[in-house]
Image (tube, rainbow, N blue to C red; front, side, top):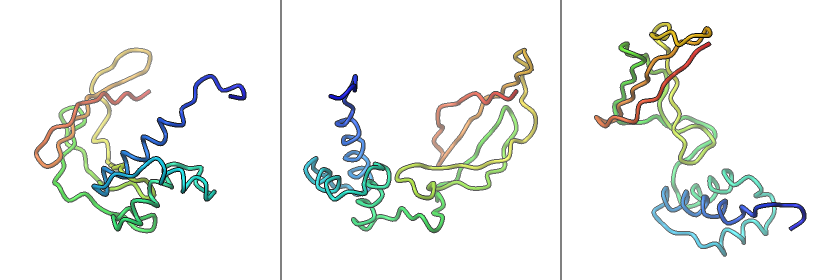
Length: 136
């Protein structure tokens, strides 16, 4: 294969198929994906997924924001952060974006000029896995 060590084509096709099924509730065949690829102009798999999902009538706009409807809270350390935006990331199928204001400097000094705090998110009453926010 012309210097390619690993052929990842099928993993990309699988990502398109799963994304489309997740957002439309309908499976798409590899043959249908290949038909789109054969048309040309679909080298960006996210744009192709977006196109297929939009053709199925599911909102995933590039031109306006869609906000999350479940109530969300975000804590950085022990302080609640102000959430500025929570919703679909414009132009990306299945990617949720959250913009927030960090409520203060990170709570723990970890050395080398790096500070860190845990970040805890709850959406619709369901806690997500905590992560660590490090700042240098």
